[in-house]
Length: 350
Image (cartoon, rainbow, N blue to C red):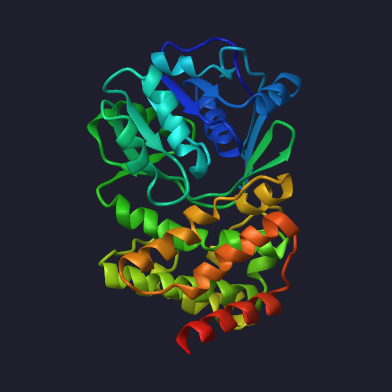
């Protein structure tokens, strides 16, 4: 296991604003490469990290541990005043609150990357931070808290962000810690392509089983394929392209998801580069009794449909089921969930 040194770097200060599971993982990886990182999070996480070291691991056997100093984790949002780069990792429902807080402290011209689920968070930040250089970003992989202070990256993928020359100086820091940041000119396509994969979040949450087990079940995969086909159709009407985020082109993913188990496992082995314990963040929210981000995942598809004067019955029903699960904690076997989504689709088409 790699151990951190206690000395603080004179390199640019990177502030992770909203240090939950994703924020602590990204912050920990950056610290492992020697970056000067300050994580701003809630008291609950802060108390955990006072009692336990920060441990970050991934499915490829990376492991790093450090005891954070009071300067490296704080509840004080005023610490963003000295930031050279801000990574926003709050839940989507907290974006407006985060933006208003940042606006009180942020230096003009500071680059800000939204590393959040959904499509519209960067635009929400821009509205409240007109003097910052806000960039849309994308974090494709899954992070779960395995034990207090231990954050585990369980699936493949690397960070992407909207191209902006203010980010160039930070790229070596991301590269050094093994978490490269790719700058893109097509972030709208990147984010919608990532959302196509995130459509599995509610299905995994409703299944109450690890991602690998869920994706090994054809009924659950057919649920995902139905949500993806509906989304791809709407994206086509809206003129939104896809990019390749997996070994299989995005428009073929629903086809592969629908294959019989034996053929799926044979053709999609690279898609199953998933740690056996990995689960979706939406499952983690349900387990903790927190509101989920379903309105910023499947809800984005419903809103796109509304702008096109069309419907999205599969994604709408998944949104409804997750909200019901937030109250009832009901979980769904694959065949029952598939029947429920097919019924919603028939009703919409009748």
